[in-house]
Image (cartoon, rainbow, N blue to C red; front, side, top):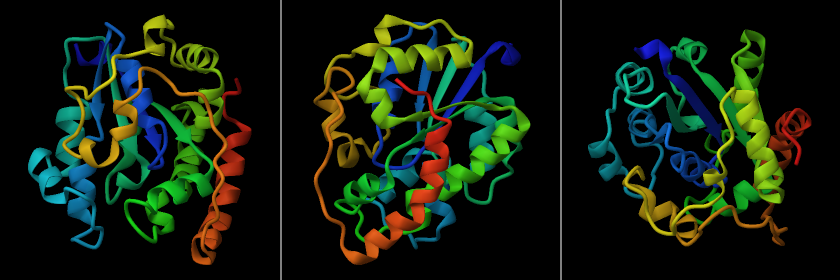
Length: 244
């Protein structure tokens, strides 16, 4: 029965550890994972204004109608009791967000300067909309008010102590913690989106959550201004994030 399935959305900014978290949940025998089911909807909704690597492949591989994707994928019937959806916050364009009330929602955050530094290597000169942190703060307000926010997870805290943070996350989601979530075989997974070859090379080389490393970099002035604009949203979300 559809009502017996626990549906988990993890809403993230790009260039975070969202794929690693998806791989962690994929190790659970009770869980089926889905990689960014609203990506084609997002690209379709931007009318070509957003140029992403492999855009034509993505559009051909997924349902472009976001409302249909929500009905058939996010709220679909599955043979496992848990469905985990890796999501990007900026993919929520022009959609009725009431479906969030039928699911458990997790916000996955990362220091915005680090996101911008990494994202800029693939897609130059990102905007506030690309980074998604303002949208995530808006989601936080909505989900907290409606009681459908399970947790906020910060990537630095997760990498500092994966077992502790995942254990707390599972408790918030009211599911048992599974030690299998802490490691996986290196390489691609069948659930990967067709965009994996553009974005997932590092996680494909991993066999678990890599230890946190402090990066040293300097953003150009325009991107530093964007990082400063993102900072207040991140700081407020970090205050309520699970701590290792």
